[in-house]
Amino acid sequence: MPDLFAPLDAGALALPNRIVMAPLTRNRSPGAVPLPRTATYYAQRATAGLIVSEATAISHQGQGYADVPGLYAPEQLDGWRRVTDAVHEAGGRIVVQMWHVGRISHTSLQPDGGAPVAPSAIRAKGKTFIRNEDGGGAFVDTSEPRALETSELPGIVEDYRRAARAAIDAGFDGVEVHAANGYLIDQFLRSGSNQRTDAYGGTVENRVRFLGEVMRAVVDEIGGERTGIRLSPVTPANDAHDPDPQPLFEHVAKVIGPLGLAFVHIIEGATGGERDYTQGEAPFDYAALRSAYREAGGNGAWIVNNDYDKADAQAAIASGRADAVAFGRPFIANPDLVRRLREDAPLNALDQATLYGGGDAGYIDYPTLD
Ligand code: 8OZ
Image (cartoon, rainbow, N blue to C red; front, top):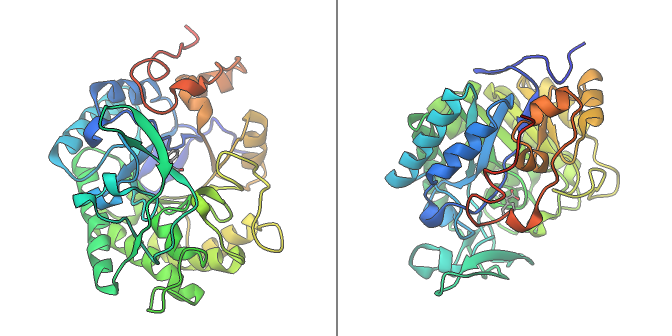
């Protein structure tokens, strides 16, 4: 019977344990460039079975918050090279989370101050975080987006492909496509944000089309064995909503099943909230989602996430419901989380005040056991 501390092969990724560091936005990359302290931060957490980096914009258009990193300009890639080298030197493995925010952005963050792009011109009820002229930060309403022309979509797919290549060139072990939490790919999936009348809107098949094109481009570029995807079938994050998520996400499973992915990473319930939160008439059936993926030929590792503790995680793995478990907030406060879980040691508490933005404090100064 495998447990949390047993090794796991996920495509080309050989995990020494099944404790994954979830992607965590920290807003510490001014000008979208990861600093040396970011290399220290990730290297401190290298005993994770796998690190998934914080969400990283594939293009300037894909940027939606102040001080989040990018994966498209040379200085950004040099910054990431420092990170991947440090993680590998510390014995770890790291994939980058590739991100396009779609409508969750603000004109001040966009090329030429333009409108953010989205499947449809429907503004998200929600906030993003920008920097003022005086350098201070502010939470502001997301800007009204403009609907993407059908003819623009191949260019965005190409941005994902280019970013995946750049990631491998910068030393990442692979990529995770961010298709969760109400960002661009998820905006295409759900009828609440997708009112298109072309081949990318309307039916479930049409709404999943963009996701399929992105995934095939990335897999074609770097191989399925180095590619994963993150999904959040029922989250309300960033105003994501769909009245009937079960058939929608089972179709996603059918589309990604044949791609030979290394892993599928599922946020269960509301991101950062209740794991049993649901949308639609009935509770979401995650087992049926996984069966649909396996039936479509998918044999990637099945990673679950959202507020798991050690007991929940062990139970999920022992039952065969999951192959690995991603931990988010506990990894911020506990660089040696793997050891602490193994030894049943107490966990450091998270300092909320230093989550987003700032310097070393609350970033690279959390203590280890010794
Ligand atoms: C917290 C703050 C900003 C962005 C996500 C990338 O929810 C994020 C994010 C989280 O996936």
